[in-house]
Length: 498
Image (cartoon, rainbow, N blue to C red; front, side, top):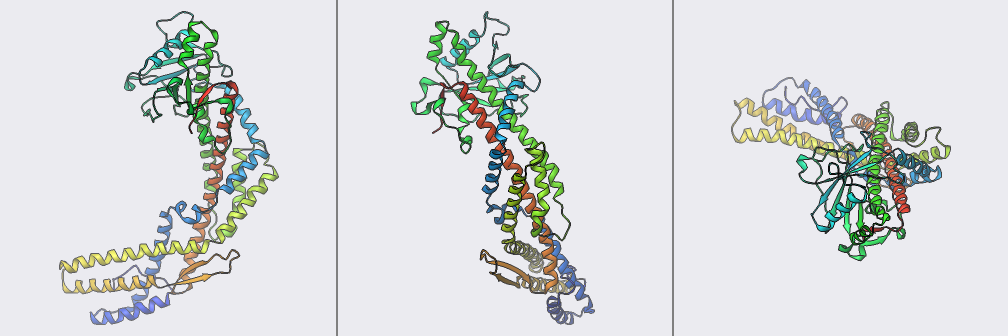
């Protein structure tokens, strides 16, 4: 009777009766005594079922489940966009950009930006480098001929630009803040992982430099003709990640000693620094969002026994913290509270209408894992039977008995009741799976599910809100920086991606 010390729970009458009837006959045949412990085996099987369910849901990647994939995240995006506009968050971002422009400096507090020049060697590239170094020097300094002094319009703290030509990346011991990549054909990805930087973001922006006479007219647009929208800002990154050089015009102006020639280079330098600024601000927002998640996620640990019907009440104070930390230094406006409470109610209702289906899906996953477990046990016994790997006849009979018990267990796992519930307001068909052994185990499994469902659903919505605020903040930030740049250089030619 040491067989199967891993079978089902007190009160599992149907399983107990089936296994008792089955085992009594087997026990008589192989002269085993004391069938009293069969009840213990039934209890152990139930415990196995519950423990396995806990393991299945703990390993389940819930974010890939349909209930979360199908949630309309655009509702969160619309809410946050409304808050940004109504509470003038965009104005705060504009003011922050102005402060960033005034205070901008490299992480090491240097006044100098190190720019790495890369790309295929060409006469245009060499001429460009020759002219820019000469234009910003009264006298050519042989020792520091590639360090140029600059006076920028807004970025007052940056006084010098160090132009470094790319030779051997492995021998490059200086921190690089930006890359100018001179390109003659299509834009391509550049491997820069071994280049060091002291940018706050630890990212090095790349400006692709195109020569005007080598690109087709359809890819050139005046900056003043461009429209920048919130929804397409990610598609407008090309505006400040590319730069067009009219090398013939530069050479002509240089020959005439025209002082305005500096403008050709100043806008490229400012564009480079704005790219660094975007990367740094993205890093700050990413860091801020992680910090907020570190604050709120430990709070999503509710008392056992709460259900999804309590989600809105339990999470309203947590979401209050998100908006307080991310967007509002003082009290959160009542209009904002109303918006996120309404969102929580809608989200809760969405989950309530689908919880029975979701519970059934997780139970089926559990069943699948359990059946696989018992089949694997049978495979090991089959291997021993085929290879005559038992020590004696008694051990062989015992193995066959275990195999039959496993087969009966698999049949039991398959015995589920499916209940259709069409009473919901939205007429969604809800399917609940109940084990045929009675209510006790269903109550225990449902309580485990309720705890799992509430916790993960709470984490899910809070993470969406944090990440959506971060993403929308980045969109506003990019838009304002691009608009700022275009306003400075209204007549610049822009390389466009169509």
